[in-house]
Amino acid sequence: MATWNAWGEDDPYCWVVICKNHKFHRQQNLFSGHKIPLGETDAFSPPPELDFRMTVRCDECGQEDTYDPADLVRMQMSFAPNFKPHPLFA
Ligand SMILES: [Zn+2]
Image (tube, rainbow, N blue to C red; front, side, top):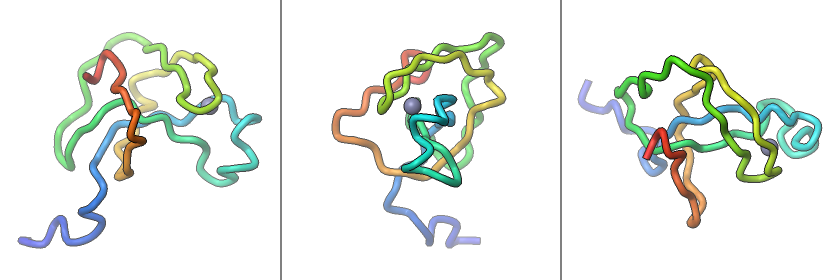
């Protein structure tokens, strides 16, 4: 398998959580919710080892919520130019 990155190789991998403020984002992202980027990763690295719930502030609606480490999702997406990683993922 030499072509593992043949698709979507333009976008970096990152850890995201889905914003819990579904009411705010409902109209924009009907199906998947708003993804809050936390930090860059790659296709293979495991998530940071967290044994506590982390507080994440949504980059779009500004709501702060606590997220379980199990809520982390690896996504391929581009970052906003002003993206700042979450302190736990920096
Ligand atoms: Zn939000």
